[in-house]
Image (tube, rainbow, N blue to C red; front, top):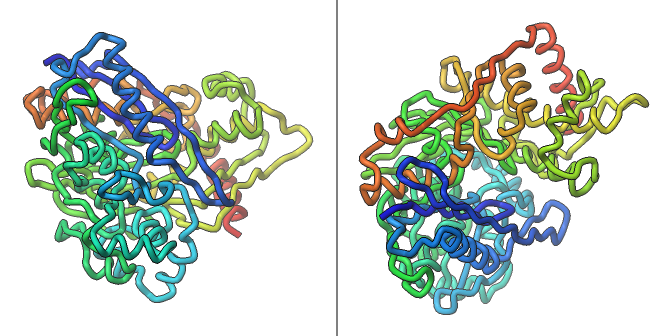
Length: 492
């Protein structure tokens, strides 16, 4: 068998990448799908469209190189996390649109839980802060939106899953209803210490346990594809949330290793080994992955809007035609002329956790132009990541020497240089930027012995570029102080 298939189901598109034994992408297919915004702060997806686009690009990637099902050793899945789907077990039809991780509709429900003094209770068990970001309140919202939906759930007629669960269920023809440890740890219903669904939290939110998937290792054969889909039975060998998959794809197998992924959001993760570290700085304690029955934990800082701010420049403000041209535009000016953008379009994530914050542009003068605004948008991505890194160092009690980067925006050399400068850390960019899909492929490959172990994987990992900080402390501190003032104005 020649390839591992990675299904990379993201927030705005579904992708499939076939990797060879060298970890090199040999065929890629991608298709965007519809984003629904029924009310301000609400974000939805059509789960049927997610499935249709994902199976569609899988077939397309195979067709591009003439691959047969017999050429595919295993399928690895990585997914947008926390996004919530509830569907009918008999028909496979969702009972409502999927509620996306970005959606803030349950902010009042979360505020009610906080007022009841449940913050420490939830945090101790799940490693998470109470926030609309996570799946639990989304599940409760859907179930309580219609009495018939709740009754059907109690009768065992409905199933819940985050996106990887939905895909596995469809890939296996409805035979397998599972999630992995990494995705389960993002639901705010999973006890990361006992590694089981938490009955007290389920009771608190009135969620029937019978709708929940079985929790399994991130790497391991979970089932086989229905032969009618891709021409034969292919093992489903892994599932992992996108950020945990990227950590694995960056070969961050050792405790203390850090990566930052620049996608729709930006996500800084540190491997903390076999023991969870409780954050005192607004970060999350999460499961990185489970392999061979052993769980690895991570500290995570989530920036809700990173690449999405560039999409905003392109689609809403029409300041750029393509994301790639932002690099040249940003470099056409020496600085932002005092302009700061705080892209709190859906609130602020780590380390602030301010769901009511809203985006602002501050520091505008008559001399501010298009290039200054474009540069400020890119710098905002780096500032937010620097905030997270500082909190991570404090929690872990150690200094981070360098950060591995990946994701689409990491191809932007201006952003990587500014990130190194504002963090005052070395930034390493890999030869393969598709580390999220690569991590899912690595896990699936290990499950079927396509690769021999993590030592073999580490040898495949190549660094393409290193960015070293060159900014003076004086300039760095002045810029960071200006950023801090801008953030204060966004959270008023």
